[in-house]
Length: 274
Image 1 (cartoon, one colour):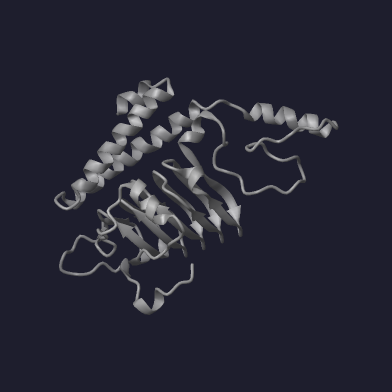
Image 2 (cartoon, one colour):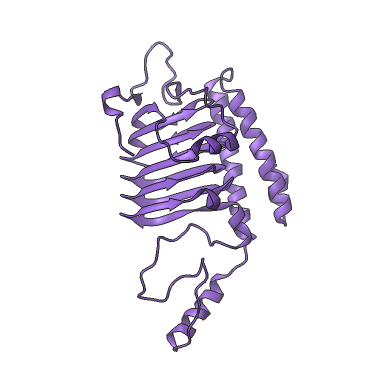
């Protein structure tokens, strides 16, 4: 995989690397029960690094459309009417919807979608927008994000006081550097890093992993919407298998004492009207 990422000069090569990474992630998820915590941590960190490199390579191979957008803005300023496409920014001073993380319609749009740098807004992606795509959500504050459908992976980073409601994710959900958030996610694996005071309503077929966290509370996944049964079928997740309360804390390896960094959310606090 590393060689493919290093030498990959086409989307076809990156697609092959992505497929191999997904296979390695599945192998690691299936090995959680018998791998030592240290080995599991090292393997997951290696996969996370490779996934980050893959995202960077995909970004590099995207067409650089921003220069064309700047030219259009100048045309608009001179009085020439420009029809804005789905991914084009509006003219200066005109209200816009929250910006997607990457431009829609480019080569990279079949892989990644999401939102970044948004505050106090309701954000939404429909099933047809994110089917088997990687969703990146970064630098969000006081937002409610609803992801309908079946994404491939979801990464939430640098979020403050946000609510994330997500349909079934085929592989992994990553949560990093977040605080005071509420999540409802269904996935194959959950990885939570440097996060505090967050409630997670979870369905996970392998195990959840927390690291450098505090005040994390878990409860069973309860979000629902029309069509979720079909999305679960498409995700490949086993709905009868849910290890929501089987959590590995990489900062707490004592087996005879419960970790102080996470707990079970009391039943009386689980009644949330999504």
